[in-house]
Image (cartoon, rainbow, N blue to C red; front, side, top):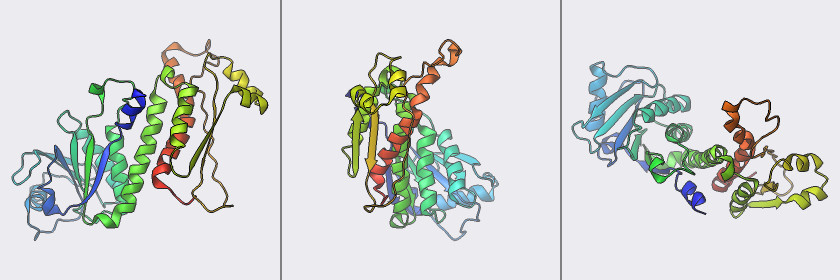
Length: 309
């Protein structure tokens, strides 16, 4: 349906690219987010970006400390009008995450739809690249499923520039898959209850079941009754919406290997004790299916990662 198509279109477009510090200045984008390590820059390096970084550090305009920033508008030699320099400390995954969260937050403005994220001023490893991808998505996420297109997330495309793309491809792919899963879970948990009924949740699970190595089984009221699941039936009688019990399997490991089992609570709107609950927080009861949304999101990530488990 239209809502499902809209949700699919909200996932950010990530691209991994080998991009030297010299080449970064020629990257065509709405903004360039450059992570600057605490280590002293190479004074022999030439090119618009290395020279800009060396100059601002020499002048004392970019303080050390993870997340410290300097905004530059139309610097000489850059194709991007906006260049944001952000300190990334030692370049570890934790420091990169903090730096990217701070930088993207500063660039959340209508004119920034395509972002160039430069990690090539230091030897960013696979873990740091994964953290950068996840932080980009986290800092720019907005709920969109039932909103008009005008309320969609502003940042839509991120080009991640590293010294050598092939060396960090594993981290990049993991980050992108995790973003897919997390945002899938967030969108379902954030939906109003009339757009997250048991039947709708089951349909989402069935669609995931079309992916490689994934199998979905959905049980209805009669099958649940035959299994003697009396407590579940009793809870479901409080709603006009018929229950669904969802069972999913991902089979990517060797036959006979021990399974990992995830159980997610999927009560799509909890009305238990409704006379005792304060009205101002009543809308938050839609999050009672957050456990189920998290499991579905995990399967969305598994569909991309295809791990041997």
